[in-house]
Amino acid sequence: MPLRISRSCTAVEFALTKARSVRRCQHEQRRRLSSQSTKQQYAIAHRPTTSVWSSSLVRNVRSERQFRKSTCARSDVPPPPRPFSEEPRLAASTVASAGDKTKKLTTTTVAPAPEKAKLVRPQVPSKASQSSLRATSKQDTRGASLSIPTHERLKEDAVQLEKPKKKEAIVHDYSVRPYSYLYFAEEDNYAVFKKYPTVTSKRLAKLSTNMKADERPRKLSMLTRDFIDDSLYNPKYGYFSRQALIYSPEKPFEYGAIANADDFVNRWSMTYKQYDNVLSVRSSTDATVNKDTSAPLPQLWHTPTELFQPFYGQAIAKYLLLNYLLTLYPYNDLVIYEVGGGNGTLMLNILDYIRESHPDVYERTRYNIIEISGALAEKQLRHKLERQGFSDRVRIINKSIFDWTTEVPKPCFFIALEVFDNFAHDTIRYDHETNKPYQGYVVVDDDGNFQEHFSPELDPLAARFMKLREEVMPHLDLTRERGHPLAKSKFRRKLRTWLDPLAHDLTTPEFIPTRYLQFLDILKRYFPEHRLLASDFTTLPNAIPGYNSPVVQVMLEKRMIPVETYMVLQGYFDILFPTDFELAAAMYEKVVGKIATIATHSSFLEQWADIEATTTKDGENPMVSFYQNAAFMCT
Image (cartoon, rainbow, N blue to C red; front, side, top):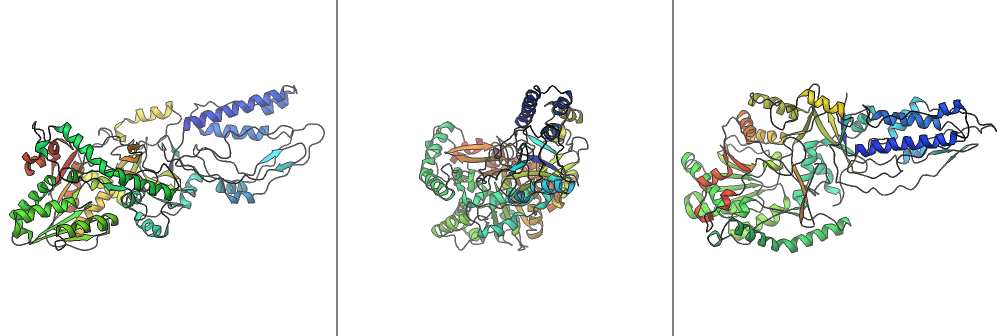
């Protein structure tokens, strides 16, 4: 089965270095042969140089290998210097050179040469030995095959073997650019992909219980969505388990004393000083554990619920109360489920408002928080419950929504604010010629580095999403969708491959929300009478290349640094996606069977929030004017 692979490399640097090495070797051979004016010797030693900008980069590699075989046949001429050192510069998808298995390879001895210089044909290993050599050797970042550490040097009478150098510790470089090189995988690359077992994020969560804090799983492969899910939610090293820190002001802002929106931003910035000590202490702890003085800082992120408390939560409470009183009261209790409760601020604001405005409804209110982060569930939520006196009204469930197995047959409200953006996605690339989709896998090798492979066989969930999208949006033409990989004509895509030999045969990636589809299945099966209220971002700046691509960022030295790939060290980076609410609402109606309406962030707040309470002196309203790239979806 053909497979495609993407590697992190500087392909231009690789091609130029190869070409320069070939020319340097030829020049050296011409100089040596100039003293022996035999046309036969010169004809054997001379090989034409393949152009760097030829139609296939692989020809350069093959020409150089043939050239080295022919020139190394002379017993009086040493082999040309290697184009790369035994310890190449490593990147995020680097694979280490061959290990101890290569030490067992037998070497071929050459009989001593006679007094007169003669051309001796070297003994070529059999196909079986060649295949075993390829199986034990690995690929470096630039796509070239690394030679074995024990190499031969031809002398006048025999072959002498050098002792292999001691293997140095791998130093990973996670500032990678994985979209610079992509091509059809050869048989060896497919074998590398198949030799590692494919696991899921749930399986990794169980395997990581006995791992150290700075360890990550190796020698395995997984779908892109499982890699992202493991990076964010692994209980041992996941981002939300160790790096996430939610901003919350010590007290609400007094908007009547704020001059304008700029004054609000300045006051907001001043409140960040309370986290300086927390960030420095946590970062020094991580640096001590990892023995790295440049360890990333815990990322401090904020939400409109925290920033505009309690008024933002009160707007949500008004929406819930009115819909409950009109449709469910007094025959049913007010049952609320919230996914991703964070600090618990939204829960506190909703319960406070219901208790003060409708005490009779408050007596029939039950609030359930589904929180995947054990740290947030234990350290923050339980403490606030005890202090506010809501412990008899609130139930905290420390588990993932995707692990939910309890049916809730009665009517309930389901809240998911800024949850969709951290739902894992799958990567899809399309063939330039046939538009056939290829699904992405992430392979973690023996040294913990990453490679991205693409298979023409879609897993059932990805195939279902592709088919469902065609059904719910028949008017959607991907070849005319702005920014979609298929929007470019086939001629333009082919022209790029013709003009640029480093261009690959697959399009830029598209990220499809397969986890969202699983979320809809959970709602339909276990919450049949639910009413959904969700909010998230429609667009995000500084996204990585691709369609519907995420923002991947980390905080270093109190600065937010975006990177250009999702294949990063698990647990240190926040990975968040934009939400296409038009597609999300159409799929929700198709899967769940309920009609959803979409409203902008500002229009929803203008209808349900207390506008006067959040208006500044000059009439500006930060709660309404901020977060213009967000929207609500309601049922």
